[in-house]
Length: 165
Image 1 (cartoon, helix red, strand yellow):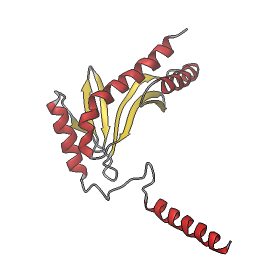
Image 2 (tube, one colour; image 1 turned 90 degrees about the vertical axis):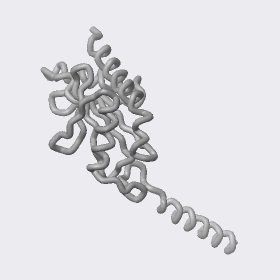
Image 3 (cartoon, rainbow, N blue to C red; image 1 turned 180 degrees about the vertical axis):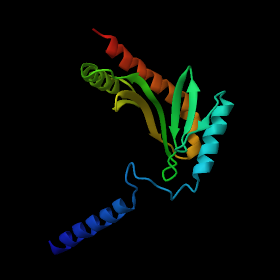
């Protein structure tokens, strides 16, 4: 019995040790990526220029570009370069508390129906974002088109729900 208890304790210690070595989901990491904010900005802007966009770096150091009259933002996370976040801010203004209640219902419906996109409120506006982890920072290139489509899908689902009577 004592040998069995010792074996169980040894296995638990081993499992806890291995678990402590694993990165926590969502934690910012820099161990595998030694890439600066300027390098991330350059990588995103060069890609966007190659795709026909005219990106700019905003006061926060994020990348802003326009598509079909709307301004999109790629958030720069120097401490977590494998995290890719694309945002379409302020696409719907909330003009009353009654409308806010409808917005929350529509956001919930869109979030439940849409892949990857998240609809949420920021003050009196509605935003949609898409977030994902990539193995290497430049892997976003393979996913960019689908990321834009995911934002459009979330937006469409939200607007459709808002237009329901």
